[in-house]
Amino acid sequence: MRRSVRNVFFAILALLLPAGPALAEAPPFLHASGLKGWEAYIDKVRDDPGRDYVFALSPDGGWGWGRGGSAYEAEQFALSYCNKRARTPCRIYARDRKVVFEPQPDDAALAEKYAAAGSAALALRTSRPPSDGVKRGTAVGQPIPDLDLTDAAGNKLTLEGMRGKAVLFQQFGTWCPYCQGEISRVHAAYRQVKDDPAIAFFLIPIREDASVTRNWLTSKKIDIPVYDANAYHGITFADGQTLRARTPTTFIIDRNGVVAFFKDGTYDGWDDIPDALKQLARGE
Image (cartoon, helix red, strand yellow):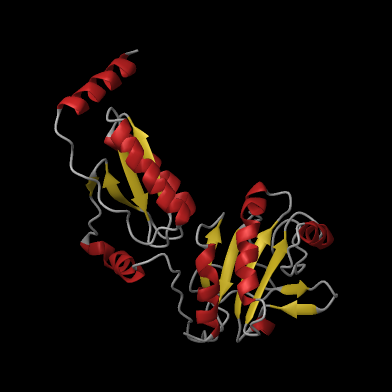
């Protein structure tokens, strides 16, 4: 009851007072769903003046907004939601109608990423060939460990054997609603690069037999290759390192076998993936 009275009071006050300052334009490098989120944020700030609202974003297009009875509560919701989507740390972009993003001196590298992004395009750069003895892993910038794979015809493949190509692979499961939800966008990206001999693009089934995955994709008229990595309980690399069996999880590997992109969960920027892969394939 107290909250409803408060909301009515603020609504009447909003009608009596001069209009507040106009909200800034949408922040840069948001993808389509992020722009929709920004529009929803604007609508809520305008229509619900009794609460605090916060919008957060990251250089890779991750975003999130939150509301609460205090600025702190709204900020925690926004950052929590944004960081689940992003590969780089999120920052508060706006509180209510005011843009507040101002990188601190120790955020110089992050600020540079913001300035360099400029648009929704996914910017990747190929690495130098890793030196012998460099630790392998699955974080961005690390040489990925080798992985044994088997294609639909029973041919044996390895990640090491794909050196010289830009490689995209995704942990996938037909049982995963999030995988199903974005597979049409993944397929659209694949169709734009499938004929490029310098690009490898495939799915690795998790918690199901590869034949189950292939049959399901065929029923949906999706022709993305499926490579079996014997990963029912998650991927195990040749050196014994394991990868958590979360789906979808997407990797992009550059021509030198170094991780250039990692996304744990669904990704909003699939429209940018084909150009990014072509860029890596050219060694840029």
